[in-house]
Length: 254
Image (cartoon, rainbow, N blue to C red; front, side, top):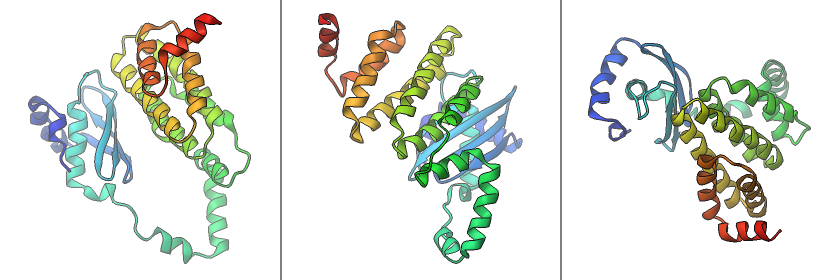
């Protein structure tokens, strides 16, 4: 994996020291992401997302504005432990060779003790799921922008996969309000990352066939929000999928 181009020379010079001092502790990984804690002047949370082995986004909750030494140290660790991103190739065989009773026993145990997995399973089986679970989980995440970003990467992507459009928009309302708080606290780094993820989400939903719903939602936010920074970014999103001038003309005429 080539990743050096994402970092300044000064940051690259320090990444090896962090790795050698055992500062990186991997929390979770798959073929699509790696999460780690990196010990610096404080303990920082790192998340790096991948698609087909290529980096698509990186985030660390340290105050450094650009790609930091904690991200570089994590990637250096990953270079030395490539197995962390490898997919299990025998999952199909494992499941197909396990008896129905064993599978049910495993599911009951796991779903009882894992609310995230239980709600995902309900979505997968078209069962009635608890939408408040996701709302409450997001509100709980608001104490740290890292957790909000993780929620967008994981939970909102799951809800998108299962076409829970109304719930997604309800969660977006909370996230947009949270972005105003980030600006008040001067956390421009997290603000930019989250708004960029919202932009990606709206474009994805639009391309999935929810053109009218996305334009209606975005139009309502644009016409009712008074935060200039948020308006500029969401208006830019709208302009790439709809007619902004027509939106304002119709609003003015009404």
